[in-house]
Image (cartoon, rainbow, N blue to C red; front, top):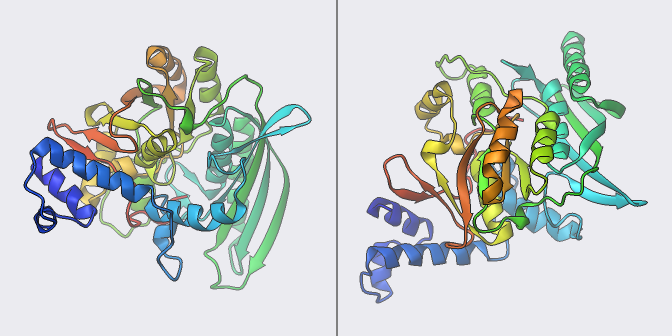
Length: 386
């Protein structure tokens, strides 16, 4: 860990080196100062969430700190129950002895059409993937449309056609829906909400709270493709790159992984907030530390280059066809092999491990040999990417 990292972390906890002196503390050795920072961050995270803003901002939809605070302080506080509290990608229910997964998601991506996909297949794949990482076989979807007055019927037909094709590819059926139309200027063309139901047929119990020290953390392929594709597709930046969205259904990939490694601890769909957010969710829910290795995280050269130009860390950029899995350390090789056997998992890799030290903290071993904290996203550098 470098001195600059320590100073930055102290600043994030509102106590810089001068503050330490002001509190009457002597300058501690570097290792002790590092631990002091980690302790302060841990205490800050354990405080009761509270929304400090008077109005909702775009940051509340970023998947980062503001989103988590909004969910925990407003929605979870109001609706709290044992089925909701895990805050997994899908709720796991038992109905007449059958295990069922239920999820819902809304899609407001801008632009509606982008390289590699559109809002239609994104809506289907996103819901299929939330069910899949819960260990379920996706079966049925609903589709709710909010359309703006003046939206071209040809564009609506194109979106619906994409949904039809994506549902067929994933082996699911759209069985119910709803349509609302709002006045011109009251929406942005087309918003879609999808809910999904799947059946959990395997004897699995998945959740990030099940992570244990020694576990391996695996990503199923290169990260950041979708978020960077959306950013460039908006045409606001004079950047050209050969990048397309990774939107895809993950149910086949997940089935292969669970067949090879029945003891998978957890899986998450790396959408808003990216891989960094998932790593923080693991650390918090399981009360463990996470150490990831920068050189082991697969990122396409084009995505890395565009991210550097935009000043964005790929760790925080959304994917729509990648998952993060937690497996026992001894199962890591089998899990990677199973993922690589599927077309969507050809570049799967172990990116880090769970550990007992620095509970609640995610650290990244950088390419330069140092270590830095990977905290939840602050702000909203990539709004409306799904």
